[in-house]
Amino acid sequence: MKNIIIGTAGHVDHGKTQLIRALSGIDTDRLEEEKKRGITIELGFAHIPNDDGYNIGVIDVPGHEKFIKNMLAGIGGIDFVLFVVAADEGIMPQTKEHFEILQALGIDDGIVAVTKTDMVDEEWLEMLISEVEGFVKGSFLEGKPIVPVSSKTGDNIQVLKEELIAKCDRKTKRREEKELFRLPVDRVFSMSGFGTVVTGTLVDGTVKTGDQVFVQPQGIPVKIRGIQTYGKETDTAIAGQRTAINISNIKKEDIERGDVLAAKDSVSVTNMLDVKLKVFSSSDRIIFNNSRVHLYSGAKEVLCKVVLLDRDSLAAGEETYAQLRLEEPMTLRRKDKFIIRFYSPIITVGGGEIIDVMPDKHKRNKENILKNLDVLSTGSVSDAILIKAGRRHFLNQDEIARELGILPKEMDKLVDDEISSGKLIRLSDGSLVNSDKFNQFKENLEKLFNKYLNSHSLAEGMPKQELLSKLREQLHAEDEKLIQAILRYFLETSFLVDKGKTISMEGYNVQYTDEQKALKSQIAEMYKSAGLEMIKNDTVFELDKDKNAIGVMLNELVSEGLIRKVNPSYYILSESWDRAVEAAKSLESDFTLAEYRDKLETSRKYAMEFLATMDKEGITIFNGETRTVVNKK
Picture 1 (cartoon, rainbow, N blue to C red):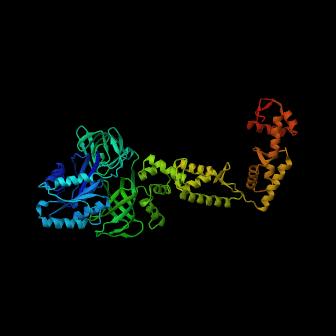
Picture 2: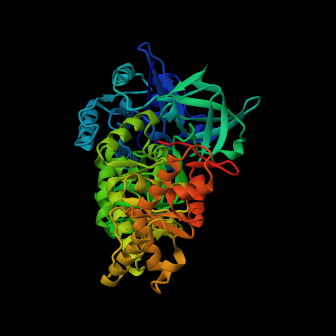
């Protein structure tokens, strides 16, 4: 069955509750005080029976200005509105306030019911309907049905019911995937023999008896013991249903209105939001930068500070990007709607849409920040992924998916497409980085290397540990896996080269002075002239007082293939080493040191050094007195 939630809206005492009773047979005023005072104080709930295959839930909201926050706790999760105007009073203050709230919350469809028609004559009713048409002109209610009714006489109640049922045949924006389950809690109570029960509009996903979900923002795991929808027991509740859920492992005192039941890792718990904020056209209040306001989203109310990102004030009818810094955490998703009310006096002044649930803390009047907010607000999901992958803090794929409200299976394809296009990079630790961020980081790293190499004469590169320390400092990160993943990526893509104890940039060559070039040539000639004779390292290092320069030159001659290291004390010409190896391979198995010495025509001392190195490198095996070549090829 298709699930639809209708919400009422309108001024106090305009007959919303009586109208719901006439449509459903249910009195939504359940509190003794409500019955005594004759006004709705808390949210009321009903369902409209029908033979057309719809589960139609109704949320009856209070109309009195003192209970606007209760109205806000229920109205955000509706599919369309039953907007109520009393025929005897017409457009009143809360009529206007509720109407602007509906528009700010993105409600895009509805029906207008003109109630109490039994109290006015035909001429007055025609005039009132004309007034209502003028009031909704240019809004989402323009051209929508306006139905005059009387709950007292029953006049046109059936007509209204038929209009409501016809309106139910609409494409729903709700998603039913289990991984997205989310129910903002608007009521909590305890039942004897059952324990804690919460109610709310199931806005996204599906939940079943036995599922484990989490109470957010506390992060408390609970188990679903039982489910009711529209007064009936069921094993499953689906997005778009008014739902009561019996949960275990939590006391009534540990959960409250505004908390959220959600699937694991499906929502973000945040203390800061980036939003698109608009002040109502009818408001006589101005929002100044750093204003303190009441923020409402889902069923939650918190105090927050408004940081206007491109101006100092926001007046009636104006819209801008802002960062809301919350005084307590909220549980939200990107694209959720919100309302703000002035701090004092507490009156509704505006609302808008959340465009980032986990933003960085922004500085004001920064063009690049405003540009990114434009992309997050109006761009594609892929655009949003790239923005998230360009943040100062590195995020992995699952974290970005949660912040954007994307299912893992959807995220896989989006990320693969962006990696294929070259716009996105995935590091070995799972972090995602956009190409702009990585190129900037690469540029900074190049500057870092140049600065180091310019100040360290003849350095082949930067010591590994020093480089890792610089990376941590530059990235403001202590995550060792992340640091190693970045270094690995640069090495794998050949931007950096591992030279053993140091890391250098690909293509970097040590820059020599003319004197140093001459010294390097002198060292090379020494080894060429020595042939099979080994030159002790100490002898080479005596050629210049700059021992570091000599060490660099020896390493370069090794890299160039001219010489090779025999052991910590000796280098030798590479050609001479090859001769030494070939001499060993030419001998029969189980040859002695003397036989090898004679074959190579060298001294016993050098023959021993050659063979000891071959033993270490697995070319030969020493059998106590004789040696065998392992592989003669």
